[in-house]
Length: 419
Image (cartoon, rainbow, N blue to C red; front, top):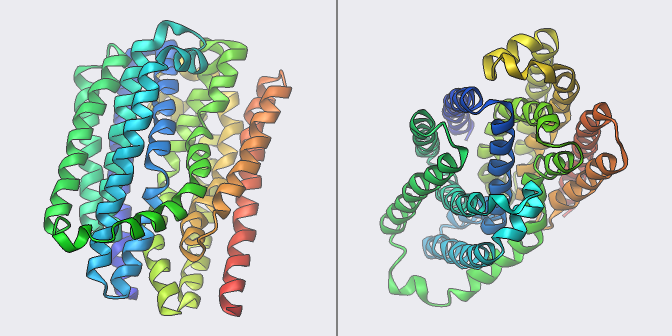
């Protein structure tokens, strides 16, 4: 178990670092070509599409790496196949509903997101990109669930490489960029799903028998988590939309820049959670939660050191970081960025603990924690008229989220021991 865990972590770390590098290159190309105003519009569109995609996904990205490893631990191959097929069916139905509503409500969404109905065509591109994001997320979640972390990392790199190619050739108009990202990555995600369905023999007659049971079980687990999935990706989207409505596109640029830098650092802390969810899920079935606790405790020390190091790098040479990631035209946002980057530390705690919490409990604790901190974040922005308070609100909200996540993990582990 220890050797396998270390191997999975190393493979995932290498994969995430490559993804981080490609993401940086894509961001550099787009920010230079679009300029401050165009980049801010692009950032709002991309993040809003992310929110829509995770409503489509309905928490399946968490459920799949939880239930499939449990079925494997119980040596129930038929149940494993049922979970794979059921999750795809749920995603397709939910996506069709949202695509239908989004198509006919594109002007309304354009007004809500951008403050103008002139972005209706952009909304359609966002919907396509949202669907592709949901299908690729589910597809690579299968690799996590099946302990194929090598393929998980390779698939992520391929997706980012597709986005990089599009950024090279379609960097003049963010609308077309998002559209082609959606089409090409969506095709790749569908191909992964088809490959897994065939390889795992999910189309046999016995898989379709009593399929309503695993569908109900997945829905029971996922439905309470939909608000959490929505909030997770709305966390850095809704505040930007609110600030855009209050200050305008140009004044919103420093916040979009700050969020981009902090979210580019986030993969450094989310990679181990990718491995922890299936691992902790197995340990719950096997009654060996203490081993998982020890791993989380040791990783917590590593996360603390990495987050402090990341914050210091941005605080000491913020101008250099902005020039590397963006360009000279974004330097005006440095004071805002230096405040916002403080959120990296509490966010690292949340990113470490969110997957283990979902693994040990069917209750949507993460959703509850996200709702509280998200409410505080947006309340501060709505009530304040100070740009520095806007920046500080991210640190305050993530601190609340990190503390709540820590307390929740302790509570869940205590209950498991008593049980």
